[in-house]
Length: 322
Ligand SMILES: Nc1nc2c(ncn2[C@@H]2O[C@H](COP(=O)(O)OP(=O)(O)OP(=O)(O)O)[C@@H](O)[C@H]2O)c(=O)[nH]1
Image (cartoon, rainbow, N blue to C red):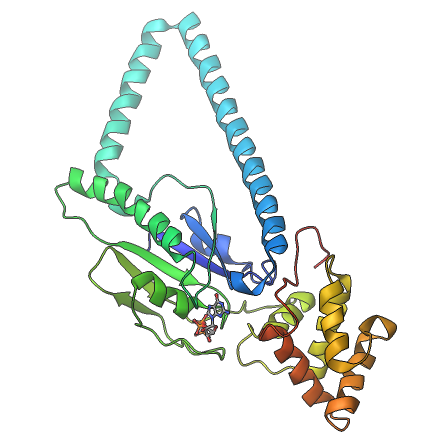
């Protein structure tokens, strides 16, 4: 039904917003990975992830090349054996195979899909639209293949069908509006705004399927759940703000370039987070600002990160224990 999947992740937590079931759902469909909220992380964070993705792509390419080389070698060995024993018979078999392939090509369904693309990564900001142009171009490029096939069968060209998937509140609707160049779906600062699957059709080159934010049915990864809660990407699930804020402080303490972040916390709340446990830091903020109310302190600290008051930085980096 769809030609391409746009898998949206949160650039602050690319690991935790990588949906475990995506490969299962989409099979060999081309996938464009969209790292949204790029404006909310540091350049150095993005560079670290780019390096990681490049290495991953090179490893995948090397594995594919090795597989193809193995197949070629096996075919050559078979051909040599056939030539030795029964040249004529081999020629017959080859002719039969070619005829079969021709017949298959004629009956191949239009949506058999293009040859699988390597997974591509795009960095975007759904709020300003930065990076969306290249994403749109990549999605549309797929139509060359689809429409070339249709033209062969005498059919008129059709738009590329793309589905946008990702956790709640990650910026799917904002991206869709940017991709289509106008506001067609509601985008809001709270999770769970998109509630039903629906096609957004503009009669242009691109049809987009807007899916509600999805959380895996059995979500047992505690660290990922915390990361999603810190970034407000977990829907309407309830969590204890003071605990999630403490989890955030713990993560900040383990980041490689955390000096400015710790300094910002110290400036704002007149205490060094390194001199006490994360829980005590939350209690300190509660005492300083909220008359001892730890939940209000939790909300404030999470808000500080989400609105950039502590600076722009990712909470997950390649190679870190997640
Ligand atoms: N800073 C920043 N904010 C963004 C970005 N993308 C989206 N937002 C904001 O994040 C909030 C959520 O965006 P939506 O597009 O509604 O998210 P969604 O994934 O469609 O949400 P659900 O409908 O809950 O699944 C909105 O306030 C957007 O303006 C981005 O790249 N950077």
